[in-house]
Image 1 (cartoon, helix red, strand yellow):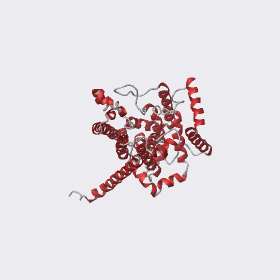
Image 2 (cartoon, one colour; image 1 turned 90 degrees about the vertical axis):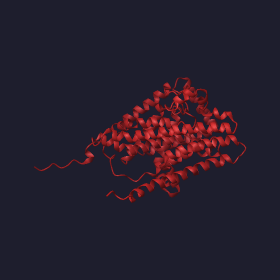
Image 3 (cartoon, helix red, strand yellow; image 1 turned 180 degrees about the vertical axis):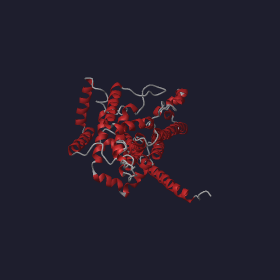
Image 4 (tube, helix red, strand yellow; image 1 turned 60 degrees about the vertical axis):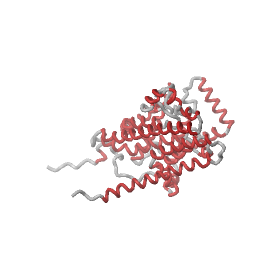
Length: 405
């Protein structure tokens, strides 16, 4: 009996189509923009330096944190969606698709704990060496002295967060949730997006957040609201894996988003317009509009911040010359740092805290604010080069090992 012809693999499962494919050339925009976001985070985390004036937060409402989250979501969607697609197609275990994300989340957790301990040590050491007791009270550090037991409990459960070392906790939580978001995103992307928007709206309006411990209040970057920008990044990554766009190019939409970016810039820099718009938002708040709609609250990822980063991402994604710029050899340092994002983020966090201390201790040294951010970026670039060389050397070393007899 003749065998029936095999079904094309593309027909095995709609979820499989386009996601499980040979590796494509890495999109230079992802690493370049992630590297740029990390560089801006380092600069912005040294308050008072002149380089702050040219970071993304000065052109609108969002800042490098939103850029970092959406780029991380895109990268996660590209990297991890094939594993989930294989499970949905019945070709592997669910754990095989989930495990890489949870292992990455554990790595981030370890880095968060290490960075927190280093921050406590840096400011405690500086308080003694420079005779500045205020260093023990900055960035929520007072809790480690006033409520040591509570702080030592809060540190490992991510409830005790130190200022400028409080970005990773939300990312850790979202990466734990990423397998389920990817399953939903592959099967029903628009329903997933609708659910994410609904959670963002309700959590922001009701001010739901994960509580900090010890103390009162919630996490600085609320995972219940910031999940939206991460989810959008995941959905973009899934579509990118298929060589598709999540939101197709449209001249009308491009004009509207570009117009919004210009309007946001004017809102920030034209005092008269800013006063009018802020007053109107306050009036809407007085009439009962939710706070996450009529404010610029970063913790809740307020609507102006959300719309700004989405408009910026859409406009940049529609400009072909952006891809060429990101692929240019002059952008190689950004791509390199973006490709070693966790290393650059961790090292940049430490260097930014050191820069803060030095600028506080030596306020009259006017060149420090100019030089320290530049030195920090250069150190991060050198570290990324060393890490990249080490990564490249590993396969070569393995190749030289003789096979067992």
